[in-house]
Amino acid sequence: MNKSCSIFFYEGWLGVAPTVINLAKILANIGYSVIIYAGKHSDLIHPSSLDENITVVYFDKPKFVDCIKHQLWKIKLSSLHNLVDFITFAIQILLWNFKQKNESLKREVSIGIDTNGSILAWIESFIFKSCLVYLSLELTIENQFRKFDKIRQLLERLSFRNSSCLLIQDEDRCDFLCTQLKYKHHQVFYLPNTVDYDASIADQKCINNYFREVFQLDEEKYPYLVTQAGMLCDSVFAKELATAFKNIRNGFALIYHERRKRDLEEPYIKLLKEINSKNLFLSLNPLPYEQIHQVFDATTIGLALYREIDENYAKIAKASGKLSAYLQHGKPVIMSNLESLVKLNDKYKFGKVIQDISCSAEIESALQDIINNYELYSKNAKYCFEQEFMFSTKVEPFLNFINAY
Image (cartoon, rainbow, N blue to C red; front, side):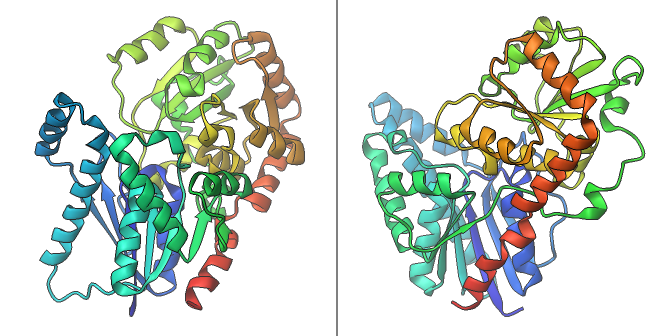
């Protein structure tokens, strides 16, 4: 093991970031010692078993940081909050490295994720002359930076301009990111946000259906399990969908599976149960990354519904981890009317697009059409995954690039 790679992931939601996990695994497999610096979140389940050549260092946010931010808020300098978080994370990484004994700090590849990660990777690449890689998971949007926070905006633009290459999900997201960061990148590699294809997992059927076990769902009463995996909030039409499903018949159960730990006593969760106590089931305990395939194996039809809040959602198709997981497991998908999703579905015909999420009749008609032609939709879903989301194939040009660097 004579090559080393750093991945700077300030946001830290590693358990729901298949791109980061699979990129790290592939780099480890080709001879890199990989270290991932990540922020820690108590409500997320972190991966329990990665390659022995991958080290993940989680950093809790120190309590004094909130005190500093409160004082800044009192003197009307809250625009410095994100900068304080960034500096804290940078110092934590620096101190951790100083404490390591008999280990070389030398890095051959420095991968930075989004704003904070890319800045730190740029600094490391400047010190060690390493290959700087900008990895985009969430699109930077220019108006998210206020007043003093524009310091981070400037630094991100410099790191982006100085990076050797850009990793991003597709051309549409690339074009938008380049406009926001004021630079048309010269070297781009496209990596969809997907788990690495493993036929032994995707094709095998679990002995027991995960959701039927958790909720004791009778197969005669609910033969079809319709699942929305991931975040549970207004951004994914959680309330509208719960309302619409109350009037849907023919044995369809609506299941929300959260990506982070939630509590039944939360006001939002209680509201959802008040809206629909008939056929809505809430799965609020996230599974470890290594077991998440059980969710998609248990699903009959997947839901990929997003509100068009900003470009991150408007251009979601190749960035949606749950969409790729549905397709990998051959599950037809019902999706919202976003251009990126419509375009992909028009090409592969793996599901149905809904115009009005609150319309029970439209949703029920789409569900019934999929059930009536399930084998065809399922076949198309797998084909779409193989053509558009196969991570191990899509990553090869990037690996060739860094090996030649």
